[in-house]
Length: 203
Image 1 (cartoon, helix red, strand yellow):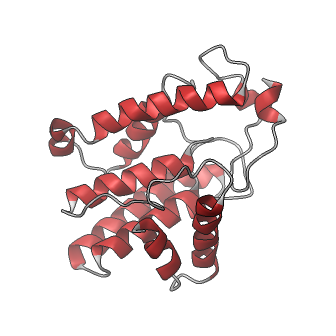
Image 2: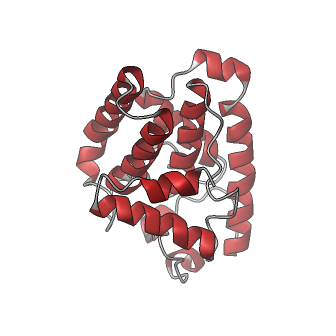
C-alpha cells in the first residue's frame, strides 16, 4: 500500500496512514485504479441518494444519514467506509469530538433553514464548510461526501444541486481545486466571508 501512503499529495488531500491503507477492499496497485474504484462507488451512491424513494424516506440532517451516505460512497473500496476517523489530522476536530460535533452541526443547519437565518444557499455553504473543514469526520473522502450531502439537502429544500465549479474535477490539481480550497480557507479565517465559496458552489 506504499503507493497510497507515500504518494505526492495534491494540496488539500487527506494523507492516509498505513493502518488505514490496510483497509482497502479491492486489490489495486496504482492511484489511478483507486480513483476509478472510488468514482464508480460514488456513482452508485449518487443513484441511491437522489432516488425519489430515498429522498422521501431519509433525512440528510440526521446523524445516521451522514454515516450511511459515506458508507454508500466508499463501501466497495474501504472497510472503514461510514466510520468516523480515529486518528488526528491537521484539519478538523479531535476524533473524540466528532460524535458530538456532527449532530450539533446538523441541528444548527436545520435551525438556519427552518428559521431562514440565512438564504438556503448560504445555509448549505456554511454546513459544507463546517463539515469538511471544522469537523472532517472520516479518514478520507470528506470533500466529496460533504459536497454530495449539501446537494441532497439543497434538493430537499427545493433548490437545484450546487455546481461546485461547473462540475470540474476537484480531486485533480488545477484552477478549480485551487479556487475551492482558497474559498474554504477564506471562510476559515472569517466566518462572514462566505461569498467566495458561495460563488464557486454556484459557478
